[in-house]
Image (cartoon, rainbow over all chains, first blue to last red; front, side, top):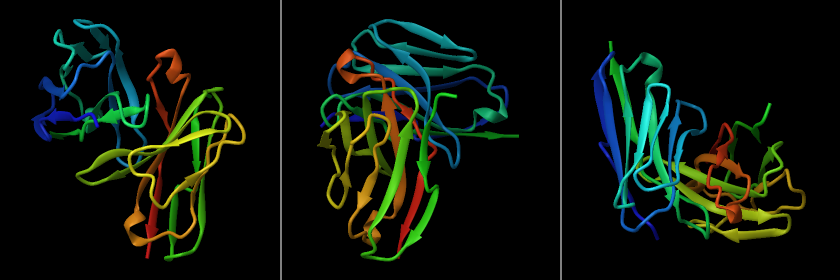
Length: 111
Length: 115
């Protein structure tokens, strides 16, 4: 099936720093989604991208749909403690029209 | 409030004892899906349903059953649970995959332990 490679696997940053993470696929996608999962909770949709080159913001979060349609990027500016969690990229695949997920980037903010 | 609910949130059971995890959504979504989440393996799809009475296998369906008799409900059934089914389970729904809406909304999760 589809493979999504997400990096980095984990990030240890200081509060206030900017964060960048990315996701690459083995095939072309027409949709990219970014989710965040807080400890003990289900993933929550942050941003959905539907067009190559698209840049979409949600507060301090900005995501981009790569021009090659095989990658996507998520940036978080001026991180705060509540940004801690696991960030997943996802795209079409897995069980006919379902979603395939990356393995996640674990964001840890050091005081 | 638009949401996906799951019950129970936590369950400890023994090998072979049949169990059902319920999932319900109040958004009139056509598409519903079950995932399991395991350390190092991420989220993997178990079963999905495109609409009432339409279900199909995902990537890891062995040992699971589902049914979709009503649009809002999509229960996950483990007829004879085994320890390798110890995991965190999520139900999700979306408006319509056929309509190219891949935006899935997740329930809070069910942590299952099979001893």
